[in-house]
Image 1 (cartoon, rainbow, N blue to C red):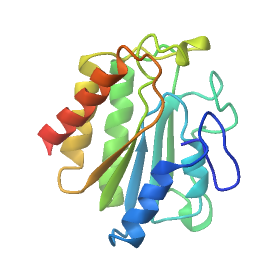
Image 2 (cartoon, rainbow, N blue to C red):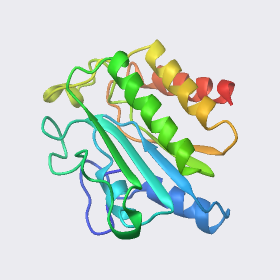
Image 3 (spheres, one colour):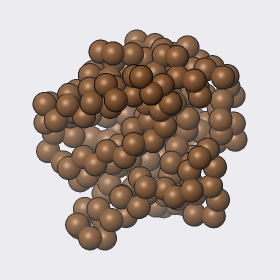
Length: 193
């Protein structure tokens, strides 16, 4: 989700979420696709690829770039340009964010996806939001755990209950916890659809 059309970064050489969004449009005929990036770091590559495209809504919930990578992208005022103005929504959160604050951002994101009229949803599922993730805590870190990922999946499933949802694994380096967090999101999402 850090890879753009002309650059790479943050361990990302290809942008699978962007490929998936375009494939959903070109091969499966979904005119309006939303990408919800819940990685700890901003999905700056995905946002840049679709920055002038009104047919793909990109929402990124991430640590504020004043505190963590990518530092130059992910600010609230980055909303797209030209015909794509308003189709990018960055929801930066402060370090040490707990589910209480994250939940507010999730609600805002899901309402935006619904009002956009998304016909399909790609989720960039970054699990470096886990409390204690070694990559995230080098600078700041979030405090999500356990039940928070069930609730995240419930948000996604309940708002995207009539559209296809494709999940792409992004970051997540707390290997003892990543499998259960990923499973919690996907199972809760499926159960809520």
